[in-house]
Image 1 (tube, rainbow over the protein chains, first blue to last red):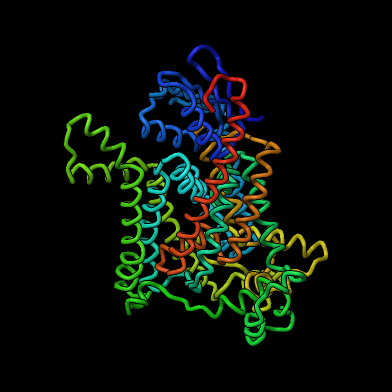
Image 2 (tube, each protein chain N blue to C red):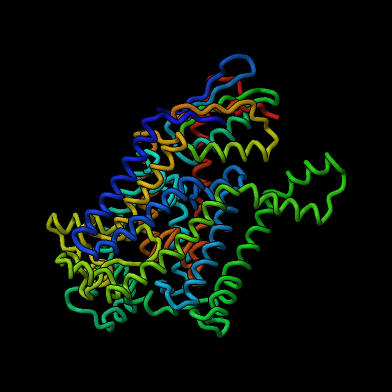
Length: 83
Length: 478
């Protein structure tokens, strides 16, 4: 499945990078966070385990808050609030 | 983040461990020589578990640093290299090391550059692709196939490539006295090896400081301290200065106003501790790598052999043994040569002559993958990673899409070429050589960092285009 980026509702966006391996999930997450506004929420869906640490570290470093982390059946969903 | 582990995952983990256990027991019952192959198998299994647990990937290390500013993995890998340097050099000091240093010259850095570009494209280094295959990742399996086929073809390729061989290499290669069966005057890699690489000096840091590699002083002070600790601390300091310091200072200034040198030391330590998962994996990896050298050398003494080729011949397996009577038997962790070997063996069985080149015919051989010690190690590495992924609820079958298959094959191609030019990959040419004080290790590493930087630049351009396409319908400032 190709990468998809969509607006779910006002201020909430979804980036689906399911099926992608490194470095796609973290690079697309970084680029999506650069595009959205401060205070907006980005929901990132991915299934590449090692990207979870990279995305977490990237958010920690840039001050973006991870509101929720869900892991189920090898699939991860991170809700990130842009600082 | 809580992850529920399905019961079937645990059952599959037992099945995998049981399978490898059965292979060890049954083959041991056939002949005690098979314990040599089982030693490789179980060390491979441990490596797979460590790699998956620590997300130990050299591609991730430099790529995440340049692409998204995350230093976690590069810090973890520096620490792991240092820990491995301690264990492996202790073994070297006992005189039981199986390691042999490689020739040092600019070829290591060029090879590292090509390899570095490839690992960014592929989404994983050679060892990273193995453990990710254990996570059920079809893209990584494709990367392994691409590395394997590229290497196997590249080492045997003559024809038009012979025109790009300098006359000095050709002349020098012919003077090496290799048997006629190798046909050293035909094949680019043959003439590169015998006409150029073999003429380069072999140096370790201990030797350059006037010490012996197999003494405690030479191993620990010359190779581990001067050759690994000092450069690793310098690299970590650079990473802290350029990637961590700014954000750390911003946070600290908001809290207490003034930032002192003591705060920077605390920040540096915090950066190290943030990589503890990779570092912990590196610690066990380092211990296992050192122990493998010790165990394999011990088994060689027990059986009175210097190479597994002799063991295979005694067992009646004489197909694919090199002209020297050897097969690939590094005695420590290695990745790419055994990948080339199984393809070389397949091509040989299909009627090609793969034994008329130095790589297969003179040095490594192409024994059947079913009795190739290093292949046992790689297969078990995938199994070990699968067990760890299953037990953490991270195993998932993923078929490659056309887009990812393209990157996997392209990346694997570059890594295959880089591996053969360097005589190893991120493990054999960087991790092991650097840890053992071989001067070619850091040269390959520097090239690999440069390659990762170039790879990230290309990848950034590509992903930016993809993102722009996807956001075209939305109200964004692109």
